[in-house]
Image 1: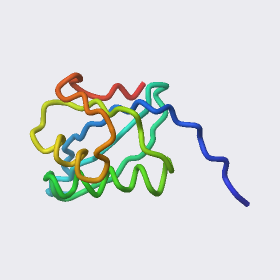
Image 2: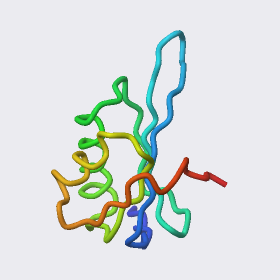
Image 3: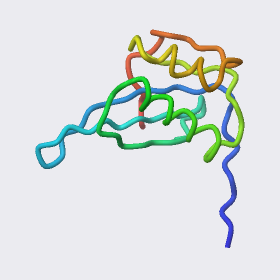
Image 4: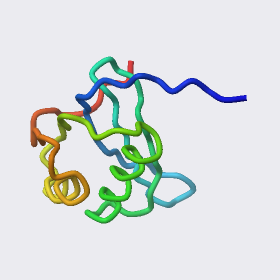
Length: 103
């Protein structure tokens, strides 16, 4: 049985948040499209540029299957490099959002 792939829009919004679980800090990375479809979410023990790069690669290659036209993020310094390295053709709107609204 195969699941149907969601037709994600080409404009994405990405953010990360920290979460404490059993005394350990985890980071939840999330990206949604402009229609509020969750494209991808990943838990990580680190919040650094390499973790962000891995997350964007997974969201593009494994889940969405295409490169978005734009990604809007908060002002975290690692986002420009994390987006530019794996997907240089994507427009990055840096510092344009505070957080991802999940509802």
